[in-house]
Image (cartoon, rainbow, N blue to C red; front, side):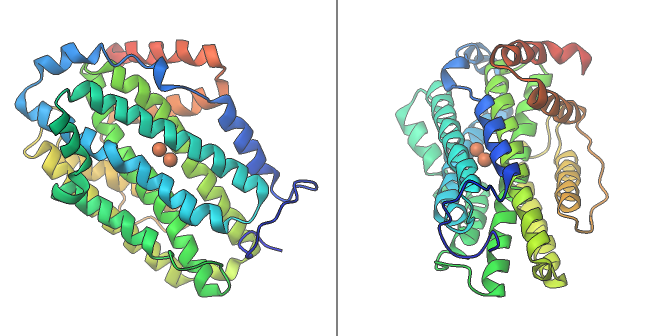
Length: 332
Ligand SMILES: [Fe+2]
Ligand SMILES: [Fe+2]
């Protein structure tokens, strides 16, 4: 039996994929709650924002309003159905909880930042009405729909279609759209702004890194079990998909920062997205294609910090680590 064979395997002993179980246990150790994040302190910063900064943050909030719900929907509708391993499904159950916490965090953010109920409703409607957000949402919906009708992965083509959906959500959505959005948050933090948002983002960022790593470990298992699925056509489809995701995120950047803000310009964001896209391709064992460098020093620090936290965290230690990172501004 292989991981993508249709069915509902129930056997945990002997365990076929102990690494999935270890990832589940590691995720449990990283539990956090929205109540631990103090967003009230951000309000004084928001009151001082320029129009351009206000536009940036409103767009970000509008993206966050629905982003994690879309990810959670694909998890339930597609990933859970086809990853046929009870320990793999344990991880996905835990991930689903984390996505729920993210949805709650961004709802709380939106309620705090946007006191006017009409503005809140507009943020949720952004997937329909704001072109730069609609384009990203449509990209996600297209990939959700691409395997919507597959009730089981019977053929080689079915399995390749599933792999593309899995890779899309890990590499393009959690691993690129969210990374792009986090870059704006850390850029604000590097200027001493919105510490509350940055604190919650630290935790969401770490969760997203783990979700992506789990998905890539599923890809690794499938590659080991069914190497014939990883042909040139699959590599070609992944490259095209990442190109499209970078383009989506770039038009979002043009909307958010237009002619640029100090230390955060569209060309910088383009380099950053291409750098991240190359990292995703490399992790998938596929040829990189952009050769871009990471222009954002504040994001390079973030990656290191996330790894450190991941391996060192105990519930109290992490909180100390977070207040430490918020004070890191001098080092930037
Ligand atoms: Fe999430
Ligand atoms: Fe996620």
